[in-house]
Image 1 (cartoon, helix red, strand yellow):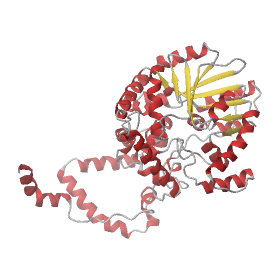
Image 2 (cartoon, helix red, strand yellow):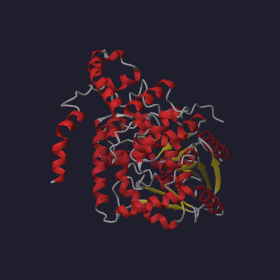
Image 3 (cartoon, one colour):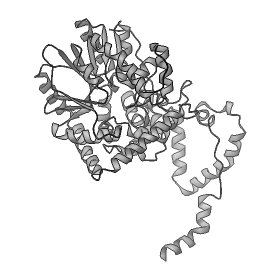
Image 4 (cartoon, rainbow, N blue to C red):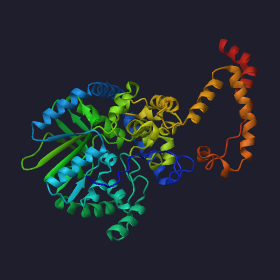
Length: 476
């Protein structure tokens, strides 16, 4: 077993090296590109008159799949095993990595080509392989760029959304010894030329899976660049990494998902390539690793099941004002944005990631655009409640006491008025305290922003003055 330290315990939202929302320093290109993608994708989905019907249907299908996950997983295993695949189960990332290493040793693997896989990011598979002397190359263009920089992806669909064409041109000049260019076509040609040789030399290909069809034992991989097809078909060994929530009951529901996912993710009617893998092809080996890695924690909380409906389209990220400002790395782990804020606390635990549900303005736009109709704002509130009240959460006894006191003040009109009066007195005093002396958790916010100035009278005062006039207007 590899002794490489796999850093799966991230997601502490406020860190010395990740200032969270206190001092966002993500590139301006990230926010601009995300906003542009959001507008384009919304225009595409709005043009489909029955898109909302599709969303509701997808929600119902995923609800059924999650409720019957135990049966669907067994059915999928039986069907794909009958066609020559070897199915392996992994309770966590360490066990999944061990499976991959065992396969690599069995087949004397020295080099690996990888198509895009968020599960492999959960496993930190590249680092594990490299620690064993196995060369792992990302073949998705965005992932390839991020790998060359030594960074983590900042987005689920577009990993290098934070980089401009000029940034990529300088990177290719430095890392690949190519002439500088910022023309998109030339940059793509450079990457294609370097990656083409990797497919031919690779001993093993690794892929993710967008959907797994239980009734036929089929894996579905969709893509735009052709790299997934080359990664899965060229090397003699193919390893597919599948999160257990990827199951669909039947192939009958695949057209629905193929209509929803590209439109929500990239604004396309269909992706360029749709691969249906039914089993091992003659002369080649196919291994399928079904990974839990905390997903069963979601199943233990029925109020949170819809978090497993996610299609990984990235629409919630593109539309989220917090993500646009803070960037992907501020979320501390593999899944950024609104989906990360509701999924990561389950996968890593509230003690590690309990701050993430609070990293939201609750504006609700994420729920409006989610193709699977995940009610993300209510999921965030649910997790906030758990993070504030459960002893096993990240909150200390002091923090839980603060929340209890706050709730008491909010529970009655007289207590509320006392709290409001105290705030009016306290705000000027807080401004007198040097920012360097602010407590760490408060300082993470106040370093990057001024405390707002109260304008006009308090709402209660305004209401007393205007109540009668407002009521008379209603009657008329």
